[in-house]
Image (tube, rainbow, N blue to C red; front, side, top):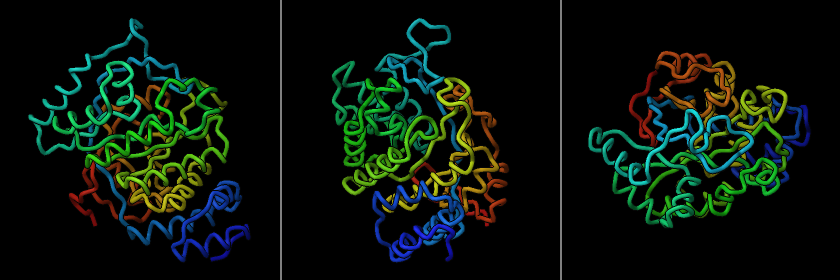
Length: 333
């Protein structure tokens, strides 16, 4: 493989040898102007793992509340108590809701509650994370989303006003507790606002460290910041930056089974291209998704299976329908 940036050549040697990349390697990946070179390396890693298979899921989002005690500068979804449009349930309702869904649809895999929300159970009601997750698993919880991670940076937590949210150590601790209980989880990173490239790399390496320790992450999902609601920057980060972020994530997160191109924030066209930059998943139908769309995402609120097929087949890949835990339901060859 030839590169226009010679700094990528020793990284490629390490990638082919299956060696772990360093922080310096990660910075080089993000700083390099050779986007196609970085993408080809990531595609090599993805293809070595999954061949031409790309996953999708038929799912539905239920958002039980939009009330939040925080004031994160990047969020266009949350409301305060008493504010127009605010709605919520009591703490007991969350457990009962999971029980009710599980009783009515025992075959459905319920993914619910971020680490930030589990941490809030402790802050508000003094329910220890292990106790909360044990109860929720008994009620029918099978996995957790990766939200609330944002960027693991004290500087950004202060600047963007999310210091009251679970910090990196607490976020990782709660995911580690979930993994020990047999609850699989996702991980995320919010990028494309006022973070530095070094902060992106450090975030990814912290996730890799936690995966080494507890091993229960199944997917990493880079989330492109949506500018419409809060205007932290003048415009959304360009597709080239999203492609490089996905590719660098696939190369650095050697212990994560999957890296997702989240079509809701990327759009269908960029998602298709991202399937050649290390991504092996596009997420799914996302009926009634609210958080990203109220923050300004311009994609349709839901898509049919045929649209997911188009995103995947436009990239020359094979659609594979999965469940929340990546059990294969159907291969659409």
